[in-house]
Length: 186
Ligand SMILES: [Zn+2]
Image 1 (cartoon, rainbow, N blue to C red):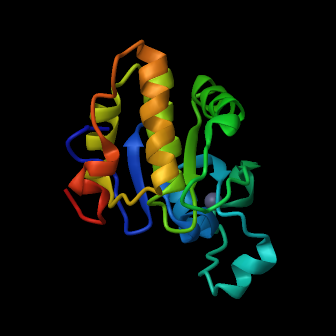
Image 2: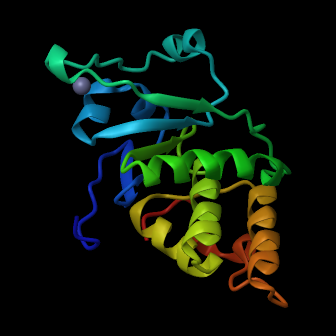
Protein backbone atom coordinates (compact mmCIF):
# COMPACT_ATOMS: atom_id res chain seq x y z
CA UNK A 1 0.00 0.00 0.00
CA UNK A 2 1.29 3.43 -0.85
CA UNK A 3 2.29 5.44 2.21
CA UNK A 4 0.87 8.55 0.57
CA UNK A 5 -2.64 7.12 0.39
CA UNK A 6 -3.31 5.15 3.55
CA UNK A 7 -6.60 3.37 3.94
CA UNK A 8 -8.76 5.60 6.04
CA UNK A 9 -12.29 5.66 7.37
CA UNK A 10 -13.87 7.80 10.03
CA UNK A 11 -13.26 5.12 12.62
CA UNK A 12 -10.27 3.18 11.34
CA UNK A 13 -6.98 4.39 9.88
CA UNK A 14 -3.93 2.61 8.52
CA UNK A 15 -0.71 3.58 10.29
CA UNK A 16 1.49 0.97 8.64
CA UNK A 17 0.64 -2.03 6.52
CA UNK A 18 0.22 -4.26 9.58
CA UNK A 19 -0.97 -1.61 12.02
CA UNK A 20 -4.30 0.17 12.25
CA UNK A 21 -5.77 2.55 14.78
CA UNK A 22 -9.43 3.13 15.47
CA UNK A 23 -12.27 3.87 17.84
CA UNK A 24 -14.76 1.60 19.57
CA UNK A 25 -16.87 1.09 16.50
CA UNK A 26 -13.84 -0.02 14.50
CA UNK A 27 -13.32 -2.85 16.97
CA UNK A 28 -16.87 -4.12 16.60
CA UNK A 29 -17.68 -3.52 12.95
CA UNK A 30 -16.94 -6.94 11.55
CA UNK A 31 -17.62 -6.02 7.96
CA UNK A 32 -15.09 -3.26 8.20
CA UNK A 33 -12.56 -5.57 9.87
CA UNK A 34 -13.06 -8.01 7.00
CA UNK A 35 -12.63 -5.26 4.43
CA UNK A 36 -9.40 -4.13 6.05
CA UNK A 37 -8.27 -7.74 6.60
CA UNK A 38 -7.64 -7.12 10.29
CA UNK A 39 -7.08 -10.39 12.16
CA UNK A 40 -5.89 -9.17 15.54
CA UNK A 41 -7.56 -6.66 17.82
CA UNK A 42 -5.97 -4.87 20.73
CA UNK A 43 -8.90 -3.49 22.71
CA UNK A 44 -8.08 -0.68 25.13
CA UNK A 45 -11.68 0.44 25.62
CA UNK A 46 -12.11 -1.14 29.08
CA UNK A 47 -15.68 -2.01 28.10
CA UNK A 48 -17.42 -5.37 28.35
CA UNK A 49 -19.44 -6.58 25.33
CA UNK A 50 -22.58 -5.65 27.28
CA UNK A 51 -21.35 -2.12 27.82
CA UNK A 52 -20.46 -1.89 24.15
CA UNK A 53 -24.00 -2.88 23.20
CA UNK A 54 -25.32 -0.20 25.52
CA UNK A 55 -23.30 2.34 23.56
CA UNK A 56 -25.40 1.41 20.51
CA UNK A 57 -22.39 0.60 18.46
CA UNK A 58 -23.27 -0.54 14.98
CA UNK A 59 -22.53 -4.24 14.96
CA UNK A 60 -22.15 -5.22 11.35
CA UNK A 61 -21.73 -8.98 11.28
CA UNK A 62 -19.30 -10.54 8.86
CA UNK A 63 -20.92 -11.66 5.61
CA UNK A 64 -17.92 -13.46 4.17
CA UNK A 65 -18.57 -16.98 2.83
CA UNK A 66 -18.35 -19.77 5.42
CA UNK A 67 -15.20 -21.11 3.78
CA UNK A 68 -13.29 -17.97 4.73
CA UNK A 69 -14.47 -17.47 8.31
CA UNK A 70 -11.98 -15.61 10.45
CA UNK A 71 -10.54 -16.52 13.80
CA UNK A 72 -9.63 -13.12 15.15
CA UNK A 73 -7.25 -12.85 18.06
CA UNK A 74 -8.23 -10.31 20.67
CA UNK A 75 -6.29 -8.86 23.56
CA UNK A 76 -8.01 -6.64 26.10
CA UNK A 77 -5.67 -4.43 28.09
CA UNK A 78 -7.19 -2.39 30.86
CA UNK A 79 -5.40 0.90 30.98
CA UNK A 80 -7.20 3.38 33.16
CA UNK A 81 -8.61 6.33 31.25
CA UNK A 82 -7.34 9.04 33.54
CA UNK A 83 -5.07 11.98 32.97
CA UNK A 84 -2.02 10.81 34.93
CA UNK A 85 -2.04 7.21 33.69
CA UNK A 86 1.33 5.49 33.14
CA UNK A 87 1.16 2.87 30.37
CA UNK A 88 4.67 1.57 30.83
CA UNK A 89 3.70 -1.57 32.79
CA UNK A 90 1.45 -2.70 29.92
CA UNK A 91 3.85 -2.20 27.05
CA UNK A 92 5.58 -5.55 27.02
CA UNK A 93 2.34 -7.49 26.67
CA UNK A 94 1.07 -5.05 24.05
CA UNK A 95 4.21 -5.12 21.94
CA UNK A 96 4.44 -8.90 22.08
CA UNK A 97 0.89 -9.07 20.71
CA UNK A 98 1.56 -6.63 17.87
CA UNK A 99 4.92 -8.11 16.95
CA UNK A 100 3.75 -11.71 16.92
CA UNK A 101 0.88 -10.68 14.64
CA UNK A 102 3.28 -8.83 12.34
CA UNK A 103 5.62 -11.82 12.15
CA UNK A 104 2.67 -13.99 11.08
CA UNK A 105 1.78 -11.48 8.37
CA UNK A 106 -1.37 -10.39 10.19
CA UNK A 107 -2.84 -6.95 10.67
CA UNK A 108 -3.53 -5.49 14.08
CA UNK A 109 -6.13 -2.91 15.00
CA UNK A 110 -5.36 -0.90 18.14
CA UNK A 111 -8.52 0.71 19.40
CA UNK A 112 -9.79 2.55 22.44
CA UNK A 113 -13.11 4.36 22.76
CA UNK A 114 -12.25 7.35 20.61
CA UNK A 115 -8.87 6.25 19.26
CA UNK A 116 -7.27 9.54 20.20
CA UNK A 117 -5.58 9.06 23.54
CA UNK A 118 -4.68 5.57 24.78
CA UNK A 119 -4.70 3.97 21.32
CA UNK A 120 -2.58 6.80 19.96
CA UNK A 121 -0.04 6.50 22.77
CA UNK A 122 0.17 2.73 22.31
CA UNK A 123 0.79 3.10 18.58
CA UNK A 124 3.43 5.79 19.12
CA UNK A 125 5.35 3.78 21.71
CA UNK A 126 5.27 0.77 19.37
CA UNK A 127 6.72 2.82 16.52
CA UNK A 128 9.51 4.00 18.83
CA UNK A 129 10.24 0.63 20.42
CA UNK A 130 9.99 -1.62 17.39
CA UNK A 131 10.51 0.63 14.40
CA UNK A 132 13.20 2.85 15.88
CA UNK A 133 11.21 6.02 15.16
CA UNK A 134 11.77 9.14 17.22
CA UNK A 135 8.88 10.39 19.32
CA UNK A 136 8.63 13.41 17.08
CA UNK A 137 8.45 11.39 13.85
CA UNK A 138 6.01 8.86 15.28
CA UNK A 139 3.79 11.60 16.67
CA UNK A 140 3.78 13.61 13.44
CA UNK A 141 3.15 10.51 11.35
CA UNK A 142 0.17 9.52 13.45
CA UNK A 143 -1.20 13.03 13.61
CA UNK A 144 -1.26 13.07 9.83
CA UNK A 145 -3.63 10.10 9.86
CA UNK A 146 -5.82 10.91 12.79
CA UNK A 147 -6.82 13.52 15.35
CA UNK A 148 -4.81 12.91 18.53
CA UNK A 149 -5.54 14.18 22.00
CA UNK A 150 -3.47 12.27 24.52
CA UNK A 151 -3.82 12.49 28.27
CA UNK A 152 -0.93 14.23 30.07
CA UNK A 153 0.26 11.04 31.74
CA UNK A 154 0.52 9.34 28.36
CA UNK A 155 2.54 12.23 26.94
CA UNK A 156 4.90 12.07 29.90
CA UNK A 157 5.30 8.29 29.58
CA UNK A 158 6.14 8.63 25.88
CA UNK A 159 8.71 11.35 26.52
CA UNK A 160 10.35 9.31 29.29
CA UNK A 161 10.33 6.22 27.12
CA UNK A 162 12.02 7.97 24.21
CA UNK A 163 14.76 9.36 26.43
CA UNK A 164 15.41 5.87 27.82
CA UNK A 165 15.18 3.96 24.51
CA UNK A 166 17.54 6.23 22.61
CA UNK A 167 19.65 7.42 25.52
CA UNK A 168 18.82 11.09 24.99
CA UNK A 169 19.20 14.12 27.21
CA UNK A 170 15.67 15.21 26.38
CA UNK A 171 12.80 14.05 24.17
CA UNK A 172 12.70 15.12 20.49
CA UNK A 173 9.38 16.83 21.04
CA UNK A 174 7.53 18.17 24.04
CA UNK A 175 4.07 16.69 23.62
CA UNK A 176 2.62 18.66 26.48
CA UNK A 177 3.39 21.90 24.69
CA UNK A 178 2.64 20.62 21.23
CA UNK A 179 -0.38 22.44 19.79
CA UNK A 180 -1.20 19.34 17.74
CA UNK A 181 -2.19 17.61 20.96
CA UNK A 182 -5.43 19.48 20.56
CA UNK A 183 -7.81 17.57 18.37
CA UNK A 184 -7.07 18.54 14.82
CA UNK A 185 -6.34 17.04 11.45
CA UNK A 186 -2.80 17.98 10.60
ZN1 LIG B 1 -15.64 -11.54 7.15
